[in-house]
Image 1 (cartoon, rainbow, N blue to C red):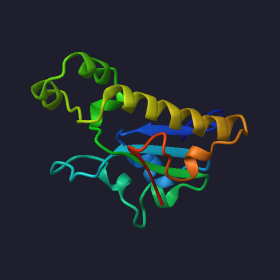
Image 2 (cartoon, one colour; image 1 turned 90 degrees about the horizontal axis):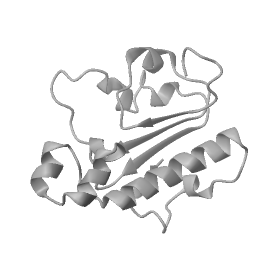
Image 3 (cartoon, one colour; image 1 turned 90 degrees about the vertical axis):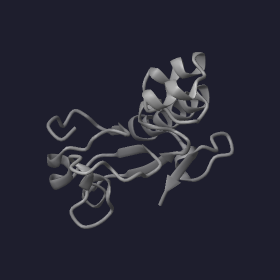
Length: 145
């Protein structure tokens, strides 16, 4: 998105944020969906992008911006491993694969709904009220101010 002006909107699903977008910011719609905050391991790169202070990505987003948190999820709940979790219901599998206790089908439906709403609003100019606050249909998703 930073390097190609043809990208009209972007979404980050609990991913690393590299130094260039943090320093330069973005001027188009951007949405971040993260897991509940946990301290990163010592020396983990690019953590300054998740803060809200001066010099953070959040402060350098100049277009519409959204920060959401998927409660009960862990990093790999944003991947295909979440579907395996539904088949292999074992705490050891969840822990070994960085999966949270959220129901995998609920997580998938929730993330799909919010990503779809974001792109509907910003690429098709359609209403997307789910982005404006809490939704009874998706109670695990928090829209952060």
